[in-house]
Length: 242
Image (tube, rainbow, N blue to C red; front, side, top):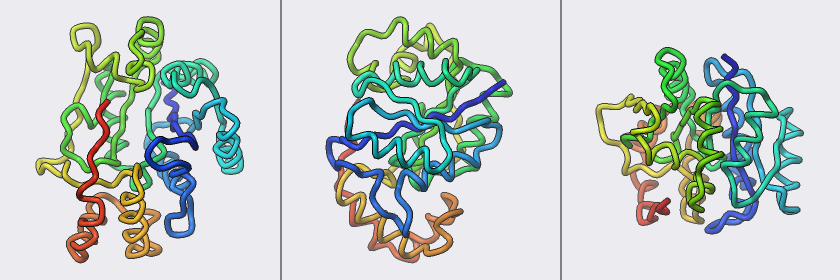
């Protein structure tokens, strides 16, 4: 089974433009995410999926400089972009990641992939039942299910949010929730979407120092226990609704 990670990224994000190119401990958020994505067990390659808007030449440049294939397509039809990447790379399954997750936990992402390979559902993720901090989201979908979604999805939000068509139709797709925490940690917000998210992550990466490159979820939780004031920086930020 050829499993390809597709990391979606663009410059023209609505709440914080160019957010994935911001510096976190001397490295951009996009590079942080790509570095972690490469270490997920069982994946064959990591592809960057960006839009064909001129501004996203910056994303393509970073992706290619780091040695990744870059697929470009519609800015609004992200589902079509993923389906294009799956076809071009001849993938049997696609792991969907977003580039605003610089603290992605490699082991937790690997668990999602391991479960998918072992059980062969149409879709598996650690977000069907959210217990992990935002920013550790990992989804994997079979090529066949992705192609069905690309063919059948017509609602604008289902074209923008790649897996929404599947998740809304448990009667048509086999969905597998991968839960790796008995504690509800969903109050934590480790994703990069607003200026206060960036302030939080910048302070956290400064606190972690050289440990940031390999820090797991538990490493980050321990650091936040030592520095609880950091949690107040972006605690007020409301998550966008899909």
